[in-house]
Length: 345
Image (cartoon, rainbow, N blue to C red):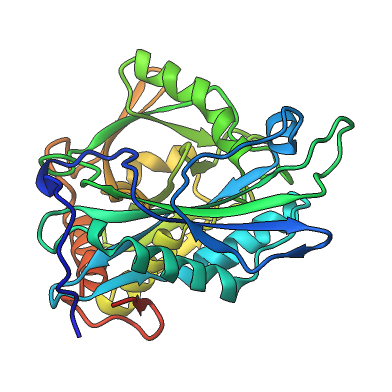
């Protein structure tokens, strides 16, 4: 049965993309070698020792996902098992105790159910953003993993990432490295994002929207931006994404590539993409949870402008089809592949 409960008194259509406190969040602690059962709490504050592992050595990771109200009034979450598995793998890389996948998904369900009044109504363009995260909470002095951890999930209603539609953005090829070979680029560690802040602020000061980070070893291959994966469309409508061990495995990217092949009948490929190839593509986009697709109109490589034929006014035709199909699946307008949609209410 669809959800009919009364919603929070929020101007949904004018909601920005930022933190908005909701009523309930989930907390679980790791102590004495095991995770507790976890519980829901109204308290959004965290009290930590001044020498906590997260504060001293950045031992933290996170995920981002959304709950939606579908066209028929149900509340659903998109592929939470993939977020759970990715955090599991991130935790292993950071010497943190992985939070079990099944318990992660159950906790997501609990948080959404407890905050149903904050799930925006269908048609407003807004969604309920979910932020699972984990951090070292015990005091440490020597450089070593914490002995205690906390896993939390909070929820925040957010407006559409782009107000007034997704206008193509301009990127610069960065002089900074996002991730080293055999580093942590393939996991969703907080430290990756800290490293990108100076680069993104610098890019904004220079008039660019984001950075394109080449591979750190040769600086000749496309990797990703500070917070999103790339995809490109060729002149004959083939959809290609970069292949690299330093790229975060985006759930949105994986979903878009499946949609391209299985729903739109397009040829897809994951391979190394050289910077010198950029001029040959007809469309370029960034993909991630927040915006789904951010169209790219221009990339500037140290003064050399690469302008995509799709232009600076609107999303290219293939990108638009990908966006409409994936969001159609998320909002229940198009039948989803098995296992993609978890119905909460």
